[in-house]
Image (cartoon, rainbow, N blue to C red; front, side):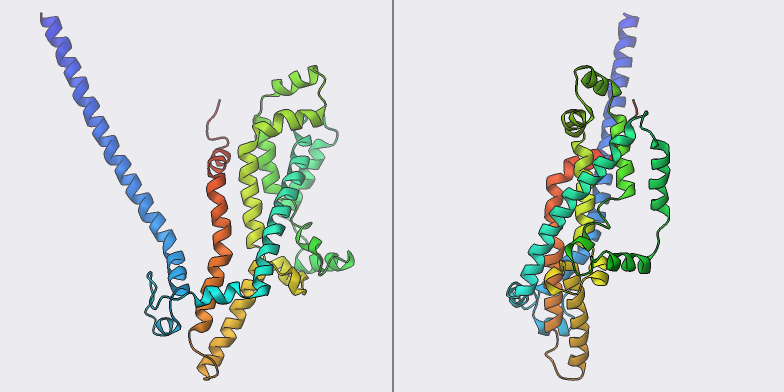
Length: 307
């Protein structure tokens, strides 16, 4: 009987310990969730402010009355932006440019990373060193401009596509993921008569969807937000990406504010148009992220679990 009572006591003690641990775990989860919510809210504050300012009246902006909620609701700024044929053209052009550059960059990254996974590749070590050298050392802005000029690529689409078609960092990440795929799969494919290209298409690429989606997001965000190359190499307005167009809007807004101070323009109007343009330039790339989120998280956790 004493043995049974002692077993019951130990069982009850374990049950109490389990309840205490579950309670502590729940409290810790709530604390973490609250901290994440606070951080998320802080990150959203600037965008909420921009959205509120884009939907507010010029008078409210002039009086600095707008914080996180619009005052004097109106859609005049959005109507003005969408009615601008240059802006609409720039938006569609940037979308197509981003898709094309992302696909081309992924193609180049895969073509560079996959051969480097072969141990018997001749000159593989030298190629690795050569590629890493370009990651740490660059010629500079002026040599890049002279190169574009000598190649007759100024004011063309290619000056925004070819120079950034591959990122060494992304290539290293892709190669590391390929190294993580069991080599026995490649050996089995070779035994069945598959060549390197067929092995890549039928084995490596289907298993690499997480890293492909992650790098696609990196390339797409980089191209969508890029404007320095267009600023240096492009003068034709029909080739202006959306970020360069936004840069010009900001410049014109600064001039309009100067004119407002001199009494030559309506105060606050340029500010609402600027904020509406910022929203149009920001929202599209944010919409893409939820579709790639699960692949993005899987790709970012490469190497987090060993074995």
